[in-house]
Image (cartoon, rainbow, N blue to C red):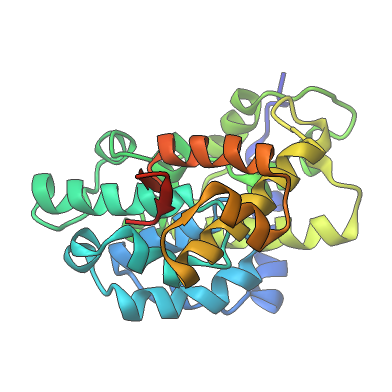
Length: 274
């Protein structure tokens, strides 16, 4: 069970986080805007990609697709050409679907209600909470990797297998409701510092998973397939395997999964990105 905090303990915790944030706040372009579309793009990019790499791609993506309407009209091929380098390319498909939904159902405006946000394609509870906080400064309750790290470090030092429901109770209890947006940014920056300063507290989370080596290598092959098809157009499976120097049977299996996910299409034995 998470500890029950006194008002003094909550105040002390906030002071510690804000003290660090005041001196070490990261300057990131999506923090300088309240544009809901820009913030959504950054949140999706940040889901599984390091901040440094997102920082390189964010402005390029916004310049190419400046709003929901522009993204909804774009083809996957065009989006992936900009997205390339971020990895986890299924997020690009999800963003296009999301843009189309927002244009069709919400007049091109991101809804502000957390439940409405969570119902959007590709948006779970945590991302819905972060969007509500960062785009609309709402006191939503959510946890992501850095936030989870902070709370485990401060309040669960002698615990193992910590469930997010325990973390979220403390997130809600300590939330700065007057300025949730800055508070969550402060927590994230403190958590990013902890990643370098101490043994990762998230290893003690019940939700911590280390990616198996075969998943890492499959992801590399998928990325190589995307880059090759963007450069050369439609190719047969054996041609792709030769171009990326990978096992043909493995490439076959990966291409079938990518086709089923909508990342590639197959026509007369050739694979291409629509």
